[in-house]
Image (cartoon, rainbow, N blue to C red; front, side):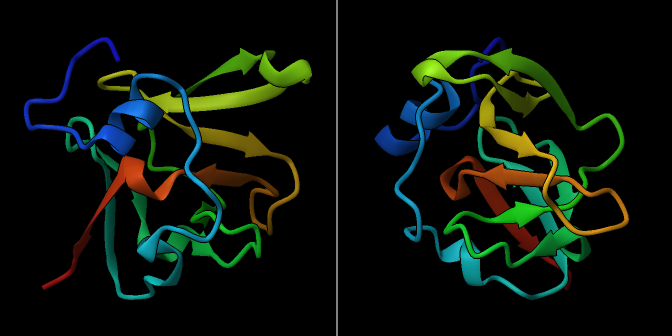
Length: 124
C-alpha cells in the first residue's frame, strides 16, 4: 500500500491489502450482502463498487462485474506459477483481488475480491 490506512487494519486486512494475501473462500460475510449501497476500500475508504455491480459467482469471494470509474488499477501478477491480473485500490494501492474474463455481461469481467479488503456502506 502506498498510502497506509488512516485507521487500524486487522491482521487479516494487513495480510491481504499490504501483503497481497488471499482470505479463505467462503469466510467473508460480504458474500451474502445484497442491500443497496457501496463497497469501499478497507484500507483508505475510497469508493470501489456499487452494490448493483455485485453478483454471486459461486467462488466464495465477493464478485463484481465492474468497478466505479477510476477506482481500481491493474497489474500483472505472476506469483504461484501463473499469470493473473491483480487489481488494487487506485487511491492507496491496497491489493483487493484478481480480475478474470469470465463474468456476466455487460462487461464479461469478474472482479474476485477479498471481502476483508472491503467495507460496506448501505444506503440509508
